[in-house]
Amino acid sequence: MRIEEPAPEPLRVVLVDDHPVYRAGLARLLGESGVDVVAELPNGEAAIQAVEELAPDVVVMDLNMPGMSGLEATRRLVAQSPATHVLIVSVSAQEADVTDAILAGASGYILKESPVEEVVAGIQAAAAGHSLISPRIATMLLQRIRDAAGAVDMDLAPAHLSARELEVLSLMAEGKSNHEIAEKLVISPSTVHNHISSILMKLQVENRVQAAVRAVRDRLI
Image (cartoon, rainbow, N blue to C red):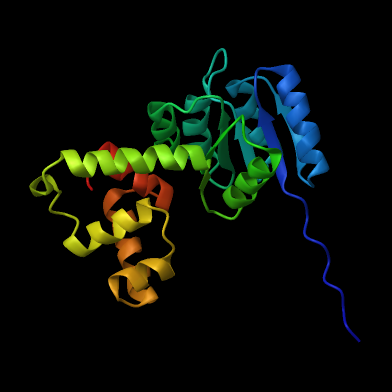
């Protein structure tokens, strides 16, 4: 007799945005998509208190809000509540805002112009410990990486990353999977995994997106 597995619990989300109409609309769409919005809040201070009380899986955070900014709230949440991940949903596609948010510890960055399906995907990725950024943002970062690589003498590459690690980092920044990197460099996936673990440790970042952003900011590739 086949035993049916219970359906997974919906992801619990705190939604933080100072625009009440947008906040209510997104909450409704997320609810219709199977996400449990446990609180809707207008600012970063309220978000920190709510996370302490409700322990959600993910906080969906705007950047520009009165009082404590989304960036500062993200920093505090990452430090105080590491089990809760932060997904930024913002109107800003400015490189500085994206890099600051990711380096503050955000697990992803989605533009408000994106469809709700992309926001849901970002929430699911964040809850699973992965990272997702809007395609438009990814394209911008990749172009920035290419520009930096063309403008900077490779002799300036830091000594603490090996030549192979720099190759892996460059392919990571292009969005390549471990399998694709292994095929490109003709090495095993387990070797790629080891290189990535070493890169994350040396750059003192938590995930691939943060590594790519750090590579852009510090002109490593």
